[in-house]
Image (cartoon, rainbow, N blue to C red; front, side, top):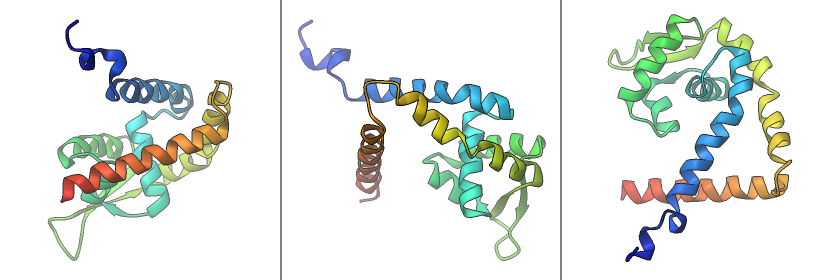
Length: 150
């Protein structure tokens, strides 16, 4: 190979991409037990934490486009996890909140983060290493988001 910088092993993006996919796979048994997907879990976490949010606010929080989040929210509403309604103040805005069925999942989901950390703690990385990695990734995300908005 004539371009060393094009080797997959020299890329920053690939280990991040692969780790993201593998972490999501680690969540799968816990989410299967709840009958939800990983993207649904992310939406529910936003709503459990913040209560009612607009579609745009959910999309922004999850770093997704509204055309990506809208079909997901429609599916979640259809299976009874969330409720959507037009804002009385601005009819262009759709507000989303957790349904009673979605609220019931919160208690069941509460143990997932610790179970995941315990599973990952079996790796060479300590829990402190994992928290440091999370903080570093959040710093990188913040940098990349702020770079886009300038």
